Image (cartoon, rainbow, N blue to C red; front, top):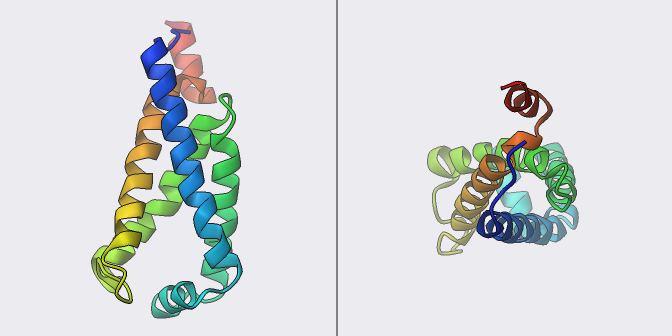
Length: 136
């Protein structure tokens, strides 16, 4: 299996830590039932289970992102959670939610891009992809 260069390894770790930090930071709002979170998930017709379920998925993704062996799986899960969030902003919620100046949308885009970067850098650690690279 091809190793990452030192720059790629550093970039991967920075992306993993920052994405995990953003996801973990939002958990407080989801799990405590903050007004903005309740507004978002009520608007989407998913309150409370969508809020709690996405929070659990984000927690799992964050934990997976913090270990090199599972970082690609964490990034894949983060992409799976954040993609509907971005789509919801673009179709139902709008870029700006309750006067936040688009901060939640920007953070979602940042998590998407960071997760995509981690997935690309750590793709060989995925069981199916990794086996294909080892066979060649």
